[in-house]
Length: 462
Image 1 (cartoon, rainbow, N blue to C red):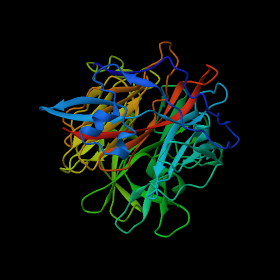
Image 2: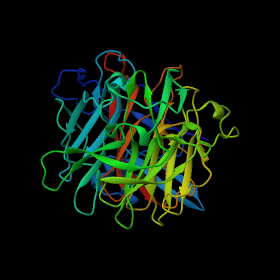
Image 3: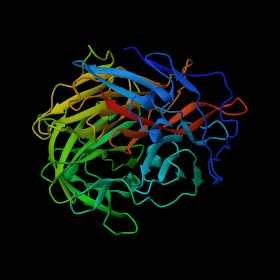
């Protein structure tokens, strides 16, 4: 697919920036101008955007635009401005640091950014060491704050006013557990360390649950809680003498008020009694506000050598992005990139509320942790990367995705240009904010450093 490439210009960038130390709160990181221009299908000029119907308030953010076909003579016009710098590392940082950003926006207009300051390892699960920053001027300037409690924002809003999010506890040392005999073993694909698999229903009770956090109306903090899961044949695993309790993915509210979770890892026993050690994407339903969950269906791993020459070497399907479309169709997009190398992202659909799923179809040649956002105007936004970072758009039926806008171009060398993880937050009917990492941010002294950045986008169906 052709890319809408974004390139830096030759000007000096962020000449007034103040770097944010990784462990010490700084007074703030002022806005920086990314100074990039699209080379394909781009019309720069705020005046032309304003005359096309963009209001003065939004036009200030829209210095680039692109018209992207999304099939059947349909087009979306995407407009965006320059990136704001949330924070930048003061020195070269290893993998896991200044990465995996998240964003929350309050009704009052405060923007809260958070990113990892820990190694990307099972030993970091459940730890809270992270970078934090807040903006009170729609992302133009940021103040790096101390490690604070979770903002009373985000999560899935339930009919009773509660908000619910998935949580991850610290893994338990296997030496502290009395485990049953394993039912299978297989090496994970990155570090090649062995994993032993255990039947969920044979584990100690504290290892059979999932962890969440709940925010009740008027509460001053999130409350941790556990929930039971009904999934006959489900498996969990140990890795490096640790037992993780991971249940990662998206929560969505179904039309009947029940909650649907699209999550991984999804290991299970096959009908022949053997352990399936390549993970599926699992879908659970809760009819009691998230206090108990019952398996609804799975997207089983289906190697496809036509889409991925390394399909037989994969760990399975991981990192799902899950959305319920306007017509009730369930859409799931997921990753295959792993220790075997870069793999496609696939999409699958369910028209029976997650019980059965269509044959997964490769929709991109790469991507990790896809993020899906459904705007109120019906447009779907998809963010994912590695290499680089790309944005794609589709109509409400997600029948066809646009060509990508390449926001962080892949590095010409083999090192990563971004972790590829991002977050999307809608701030209006047509408008959203993207937070992401840029590993090749150029400082005022000409050094390349990891940075966390945000951009604001406006999307209008044509």
